[in-house]
Image (cartoon, rainbow, N blue to C red; front, side, top):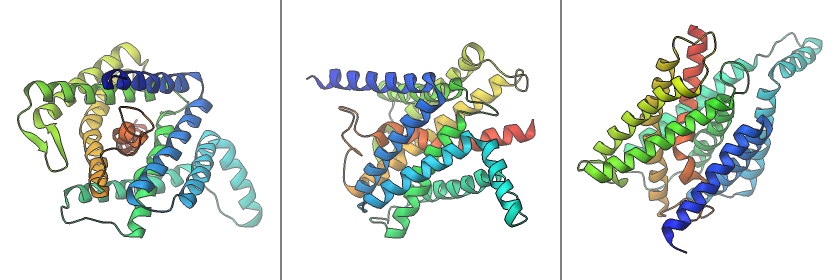
Length: 296
């Protein structure tokens, strides 16, 4: 089969599956990304060469527990606090747990950025590999599901809007870079990326954010006058940090000496190759939403 046709069919199936799961129900969305997480964990363990059995079991249980707690947030708080009041005088706030997990994830994200610029690193210690697995792979998938709830209830438009921005950024970064790109962005990690392509991707993503805010998202009463600012800001975050996420995954592949993270998507590589931008962006978007909620 022609390589271009193979990529097109594989990409179409991926997008159709993604959109169908997001739009069908909360449960189908959470389930699909749980499957993506298991595959991404397998791919990452292969990249960094660690045993796969324990991480796969842990990741499955951790993701299931955290997403169920988030989905049934009020019920969980009532149950835990009711149990604790009978035993020890202590209350549990799910938002506090989210904050702790977010801080850990952002610290690992910062560690990933340091790794990206450190040319001396040729291998990783076993402890460091597990830290990256948890903070770079597992937690971002958790935050992807949390983002979909926005400020209150599950809203598929939020996560679809996020993916539209990522696809817009990737597409126009490629088109602009291919057309007028001359200056390399980070040649030793990703030789094909250019500064012109990066700027073009960000500009078109911001424009897409503007269109999403006007034509697709129905702002709540809280944000009706600020929707454009919110979505163009999200687009900026996607354009900048999505590119960094792409480069970081390329760094892990370069250390491993492989071209793709996997082979599950013919012509595209693995799940990590498709989701490298969104998993790095997700915790930052979640932080942005929390700041937005607090300020408002």
